Image 1 (tube, rainbow, N blue to C red):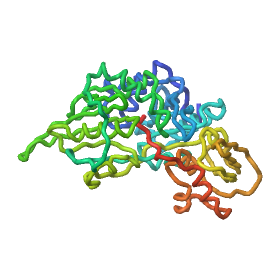
Image 2 (image 1 turned 45 degrees about the horizontal axis):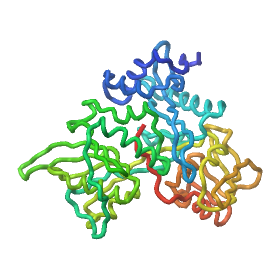
Image 3 (image 1 turned 135 degrees about the vertical axis):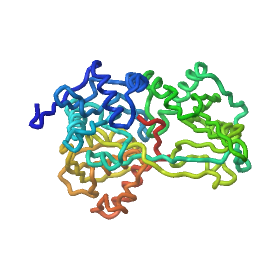
Image 4 (image 1 turned 30 degrees about the horizontal axis):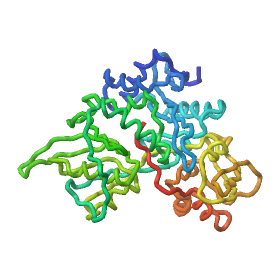
Length: 406
């Protein structure tokens, strides 16, 4: 028992109803059976920390056992932070801090996953716990029937719209081929597939159930929302997920969506460097607004930095600040070879760059450049040219993108 009367422990399966009710309250919804069902699909009670005021659950945070694709090295273990909530009457009492400390200190002490990541409901919260903005997305809208530029190559195979039961094994096989190649993508255990494809009516917001269209090298999951006005049909097609393993499959799937009858707008979340705009004859047919997706944190600087491969040989000393996980504070020498492999050791040498652990998390996947953070005054260059060398080392071919929120 702490001085404030609050206690912390991991949950059990019996805590699921209280867990779901707290999430519903914190996220402004009702604790329906549908919500409890969704949470049960991925619930890991022994990795979920709860703060209690007496018998009442007033704060919670869960770690999902997942893997994330990191640059050059495929999938590596990830502590996927989710279901973080504090009861309205217990905010600003240190409840969230207690949960975050239990997660990160526990991972360090147990030798757990070296990387943690989350999607943030409020972006101002998580930098103080060492999370940096590692990946972003676009909310994109494209006018239906927009033409492609001349010369775009399409698949010879016709896109097939198939039923859910027939689609699931096909899309799983394609996803499992693509995810290890896409930086920022997560693996999907069976329970996660059930969560991603869970489709109760209350989540449709007036649109259809999920629809599935497939090619041998790609698939798209989407919804349709019927609408009309005096000018005629005004339907909206919303893409939930698209995966294509070849440029031809990508173009063919988008051609299928853009030509859908009675639709005037195709919309959805896309990567920052989405190729679609470069397929269009009129790039202005596509409008975009940016949002943040993955926030990433290195639990242990030395264990985390060696999980990825690097784009250029480099020998730099990073002066890292980490007030929340003080074992990371210090000077770390990062040495990479021609193959992108890294060694990381703690040293007494003066730093070439000074940065916070949140800045290190931001640049880890290649989605935020060290040069950008230096221009923002966040990374301090103490050795001439160090920012340029770090930018080349952390660079990736494509922007990181996470295909799902969790």
